[in-house]
Length: 187
Image (tube, rainbow, N blue to C red; front, side, top):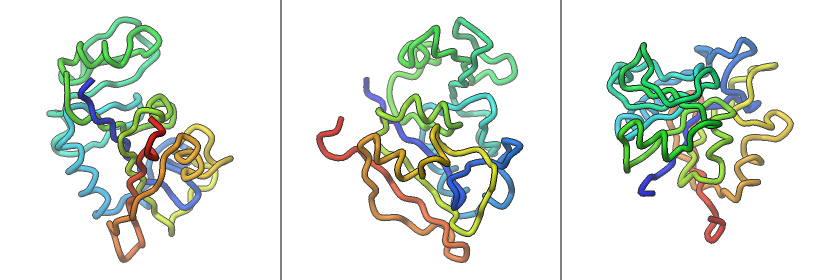
């Protein structure tokens, strides 16, 4: 299929994407990362996330999206968001969900949470890992299944991904984003 699959997450120094209440705290929000993320989603043909992940940006209502949920069986349009398709991966494939959402090509942005990231772990063309090294969220929600037992880097590497050069997103707080891509020949 002519899709480019990209993942996006910002994590604390301890690998968390949310606090203990499963909410992304303001301490994990940085203007540089926000701009990078928003620009990437504006270019994407489709956004994929779970019921608790949403980017809450001005262009959000215009974006086509798949929302993973176990509460439905058949693919259906979200009654609250006309550009969103509710998708239960136990009852329809990713390709079927894309067809239902009328998306046949382009970049697909996977934005979380951990179970959603995990579903695509062996399909990413690039996983953009933003890191906020000065933020800690003890008892928070790990960005991937298996975090904090393993670091986000270890999880990505265990799926044959290699890091590229990091880009600085917010120099004042040392926030960077690193593109992780499949090692040559691993896919």
